[in-house]
Structures are given as C-alpha cells and as structure tokens.
Length: 120
Image (tube, rainbow, N blue to C red; front, side):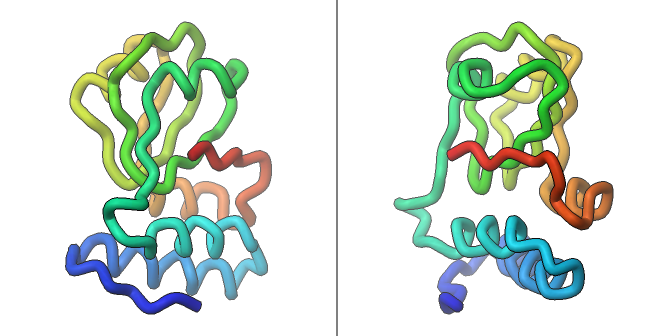
C-alpha cells in the first residue's frame, strides 16, 4: 500500500474511502483506483472526451482515476465517474445524454464494481 503524499483533503478522503470499500466488498477495482489516485500529481491520469468515445460503447459505466478534459466529441451516452471534470467535458457528456458522477457516488451505487471499465 502506497503512502498518501497528496495534500488535497478531498483526494485523501477519497483514497481512504476507496480502500475501505475495497476491503468491505472484496472488490479489487476500488483498490486499483485508489492506488492510481495516490500517485504523484504529475503522474495522475488525464483523459480527453475523444478517448472515452473511442473505447466505450453506448451505456457503458467508466471510471477515470483523475481528470476528464473536453477535447474531442462524444456521440453516445455513457456514465462517467472521475475525480474531476473540466467544464467543457461535463457539458459534452451531458449533451450526449450521458451522466457525470463522482467516484464516491459510483461506489455507493455499485459497491461490487461490476461492469465498470477503468479508462486511463
């Protein structure tokens, strides 16, 4: 288990929450996401909308352990959970009838992490 070197209080809380839910629900996916979020900021994942469009199908559930940016277009509805979204990315996902969630909301809705893709 990596030490948390982040200073962002929301990020620290999210990492601890994911580790706890991983143990409680025996869901390794939340542990993997927590470890990705615990990386240094310069190595944290940044994903553009175009990548989400390329690697997802309609009505997929996707987790981005980092930030979603608005470069590109999306042409099908998906549910995206991420640590943060740019303003443009949120607009484009919602315009395509998709849904933007926080990672905590996704864990509460789907504690086992079934049918969730990690994009990063």
